[in-house]
Image (cartoon, rainbow, N blue to C red; front, side, top):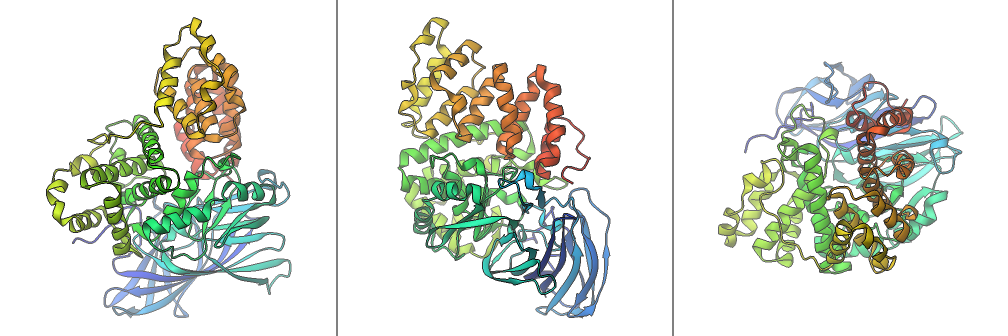
Length: 617
């Protein structure tokens, strides 16, 4: 098999691999930098190895040693997406199998894409600053020099020095704390990660954090203003973990903590090992958005334990994780609910492909990412097109129990490794060796290497969707004289998930008349709903219908939180409302300094605003 090339990394991972990282971070809130060093235990994969290349981006390198001997190093030409290759020349040639410790002293840039530094005003408590990282997909290189590719997995140990009034947590097991021997106003927190993992899963948070215990292996971390609400919202975490273990095998990471971040966190969740990050937009107060937790828990197997070898195979992480997340839903609720969530996912896929364009190669399940920024390629395609393929295979091969047997076996086969789509497919054929004739009928090229919607639309059970479809159709077909027939009873028996589906269906139709929207607000009072998924879709329905009363509410939601799933579409809808286009652009420019750098960069592109200016100094 040909050597795998990662188009998103400079690092020389075919000639040497990182086995372990030893990190020391001094967190400087005044300068917005991490200062410290990283010691990489590196193993040569070939004889007479004279040098190696690591990924960096906007790092200031001051010294490099190899086994305590000074080593020559040089930074290459900066690439606008991949950053700057760091070439280290060894003081002696390495032989195959030889391990050395490469120690690099460095500091990050205040504009490091992996890090967001929040002022006290941007936190819930308003008293202390806050730092969080987001390394996926290729931003770890802005936080430390490393082989920043998911094809390499390693363990790590870390020491983090922070001001005494703050707490540090990482994607690892906590290993004690002590006063900083160099500064009695600071504490050092220690962490160990004994399970091999890729660089994009290194994560750090520093803030005025508290924790509550919510299960035998789970604490919820947050600022004190949110920690009790988080403990209520995520109280089913242990049940989900046990359900996932029943489906996928033992949980190998030891601790499963959750951390509720400030509102600017750009994603719904991030599956950092031992410490899942979640957005505060999940705190609806009704436990209705726990599918995000099921998704992040599922990543403990598909993504963290078995990992895509390069970002072109991202669907292996996300498609399997959505599949496992929905299998958890089937176990904890019922099969109708799994089918219902799958229908909702198909709609999200349609919307993503509509946004990108159905001929856009980034809508391929396995896209070519040469010279492509992975942040710009991010969408629901690897999640929902990936899930649709797995569900299609489930239908063809004998149902959920039989196909889940394959998924579990795949996890066991590739645990602690990284994998490509070709390796996954070869194992699928091996596992189902008695059903090769069925597999040969699958349109593999249509599924994997063709843009647009999948070649086959799965047939989902509509039991839970029927009420949503009926209500949507009633509103679309209603004349002015029919509006009095609507009442609060229409929605009383609907779950939060069904309300989300009803609004998602409306978004697929032409905008409904303003009189209808006003009546909808009158009878359902959707403006008062706190559930972020419902509120987001309701505001989009309103803006598309050009209801001006909703404009301030849409601006408020677009700017008070930074989850890209909500912020980008809301800004796009407001921008498309021509009367408010200038206000939309001005609002973004005013708010961009407080946004996460990735969010700011992508919203700038959406609104055609110059994105070269600094986004979060």
